Length: 304
Image (cartoon, rainbow, N blue to C red):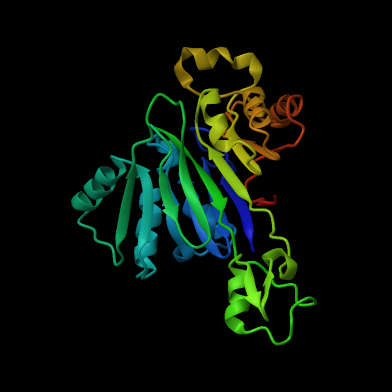
């Protein structure tokens, strides 16, 4: 099944020509999940040929504007496109007030139902549990309520080993095998693994939003397949963090990836001061080799 991530924006704070604030689109089995919605997100969705109304779940990490200023425009564009399906919005409490205030004073209404799911952010919270994936918050350290999101693939039904399957095996027993059960057939116990193929490894993706270096997240993301971690600064500007910016360096992002035993690291949320992002990439790779830059428009395959 498809499990892929497209970067829509990877710049911190201020957009520039060709560089947009944080936004990502996760596609799992043709179900689309929007992660953060910085200014210009809907333009980026159009640029990379994604349909607004295929998005049914939006996750906002925190209420700094560069992570949600694109949301109101996107919501209203969905309205103009005659959306009727419910839209689920997961965000810190308070974003609902911002949206309602806007629609109150602009005398606007939506054709569809917007369902708000607030999270508190102090402890990991299960936000979504459907037939495909679970989504859980990852509490960050950013000076205000801020959470990342952990997407985990759920186990699927097992595939039958057709070469070993008895031709006269009844359908109910085949279905039991696909559910992982052992079966009795013709007076014998048949172990599930005798007639099924080994399950595929389950995939996972962790989005670690704006945060200071914090090891408290490591147990929750341990052994994650793909990790996105903000890398606003190079190490020579680490003092900015202590001055109250609550961000991370590329080296610190790599340290989290290494200590959590992630398979792959994506760094993003780059300060606009860096014209050449390779300096951030090299700093991270000195600690964690399997590091790539978050590149706008690039799609990454989430593999186990």
